Image (cartoon, rainbow, N blue to C red; front, side, top):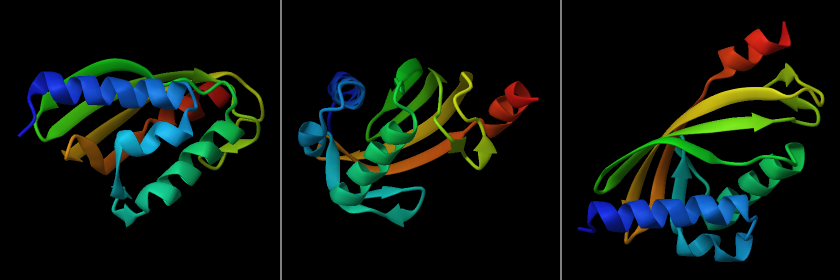
Amino acid sequence: MPSNDDLEAAYRGYIACLNGRDWTMLDQFVHGDVRHNGRPLGIAGYRSMLEADCERIPDLRFSVELLVVDPPLVASRLDFDCTPKGEFLDLPVHGRRVRFCENVFYQFRDRRILEVWSVVDKAAIEEQLR
C-alpha cells in the first residue's frame, strides 16, 4: 500500500498535469480502467472528457482547497474561478465568470486513479447567475 506522502505526490502531479494540459502524461496518473461517477471511461474516454471541459472552459484551472489522504483513497475539494464559453451543467453561463467548488473522491490502484466520484456545487453557479 502506498504511503500518504506517495498518494499526495501522485495527486498533486495529476493536478499539475491537468493545469498544464499535458494530456500525453495523463496515463502516469490515471489507471487505464478508470471510472468516473460509475461510468467506465478508460483512459481515452477520461482524457476526452477532460479535453472537452477545457474546450468549453478555456481558463479552467484546478485549485486544491482541501486534501485528505487515506490510502488507497484521496478526498479533495477543488476550487474553480472561470468563465465557461456556453452552457455549463445545463446552465446559461455564456462567458460569465463563475466561482464554484467540486468535492471529489478518488480511489487509487498502483499509484494511479482508478475511480473518481465527483459532485460539483451547481447551486453556487445558479446563485451567481440570478
